[in-house]
Image (tube, rainbow, N blue to C red; front, top):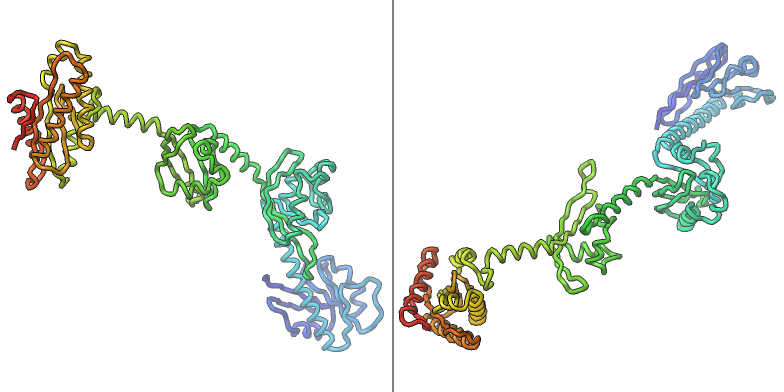
Length: 509
């Protein structure tokens, strides 16, 4: 607390009174100075000055010089009261009486000093608060408001004192009695629950609607009697308008957007979100916890059963002090882009006519085999006399033959990697376990199946196929050069099958 400096001026021709006061015990943080003089001469108006008049004569002569801020004391031995009473009257026939009255005066002045300074501090702080602050009695009449409150309602403190809401905010009494857009209900809640409560209140003023975030608390006397309420209101109208603007912007965006605060509560969400997740309409926070977690991509199904792929973008929101105050979550529908990418990738890696892998993708696939411990076999397939089909029946018929051939290859080697090497040449790369005889048998089965397919297609020209097989030695390390050698060996085996009369299988050891 502040130091209280009390000045005593003793109007007396005897310095004994001043000496007694100087030696009076003092309360903490209190200093006393004593000046003894025969008369005042000038006006005394200092707030912490006590003027002690020794006797009625001195008091009657100079009491008019003690102005309103100073304290006057009449020290008398008689019992006849003066017409113009001083602030204090000391009946002091002995030194002990003077000492007692001086101690009481110092103690009371110390309390008054503390109260005055605290009141000044409180009122200064009260009026320095930018939010609206007020005190009300139990009937709702305003007892005390700060400058911000007066500025908001356009009235002085005297005009607000002991007045109710409808007068202060210029609301017609009929509307006030209806209780719409006023503080009646929240005041009742606070007094009923007996605790501080937070409210979002819409208040109708002469300047239009205002949105306040208001803390209200009950006021209790020392004996527990409820005598009113205290309120602190921050005008968040502009913030709510900004939120409305943000929500409007979110609605115009072609993707789903959620905004979380620093506690993980979703404070804004666009309607696009509920198109994909209608079951989370009333609990978007659960969606963040149950669905998103740490995912960067989500797959959902539309009502019509079609799949949707959503990418999840998360970005922290920072305050001006670089503290994280929230998070932005954006969901973008990339289904079309992903399908387009898959088509592009497929077109780059597959043969347009047959749908089989092309040589470009085969080169990438061979790289994956270098460290693969699986068995490995290459079956090179070529159609016999295919040129006659194109020359005699045309390219459409030739394309049809290639498509049927590719389908048959896929049926017979559904778990293997099949490549159209070009024209009517195909290569099967198999990682199945088996020796040379096994793959010769598989190749022969393919030759027979193709013969049946071409025969059932009622082709006017006889069609068949030849195949060459090369099986990797398990003891030899797979290197790019070794794999290329196996391809050439299977191609060489195919050449021998052609040389040996076609429609057969040969193996290169």
